Each structure stands twice: as structure tokens, then as C-alpha cells.
Image (cartoon, rainbow, N blue to C red; front, side, top):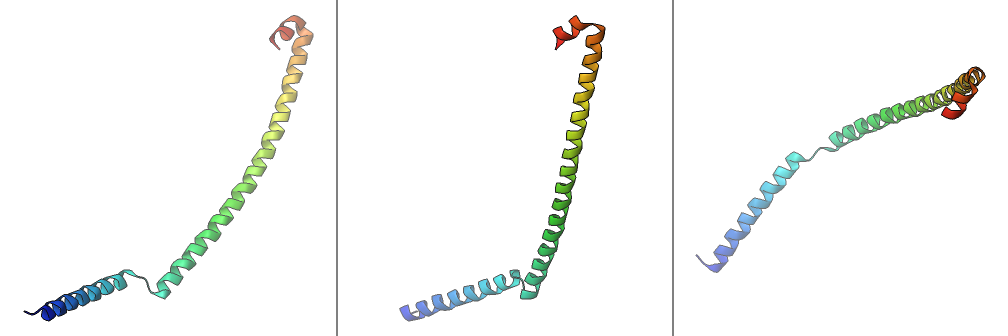
Length: 97
């Protein structure tokens, strides 16, 4: 076999390898329609998650307001209890405060 024949054999083997690789990659790649469908699904998921996040933010603000209200009421109740205790026994309450 001549050097030219060997070179052609290597060339055709390389072409065969290239064709096989391209065929395999084409099988793994999605069609434009599949990509568009995937993008549409991702967009729907994003919109759904954004809506859920907005709802959670609103719920969080409502809970924060409720927490502040309860905290204020508890502080008033504590002061009322301390005031009552002071009236009954001024020394104990002032020592524990």
C-alpha cells in the first residue's frame, strides 16, 4: 500500500467518524418545535412561580402586620399586669423588673 493509499484510508475513516458523530448529535438535538414547546413550558412555570411569590409576599406582609399588632397588645397586657402587681405588692415587682 502506498503512502497515498494510506492517507486516503485515513481520510475516509475520518469522514466516516465525522458522519457518525454528526448523526448521533442530530439524534440528541431537539427540533425547533421541541425547543419552542420547552420554552413555552418554562415561561408558564415562571409565570406560575411569580404569582406564587407575589401571594407569599402579600401573606408575609399580612403576617408581619398581625405580629406587630399582637406584640403591641402583649406589651400593653404586660404593663397592665405589672401595674396590678405593683398595686398589690410594690417591692416584689420593682425588684423583678
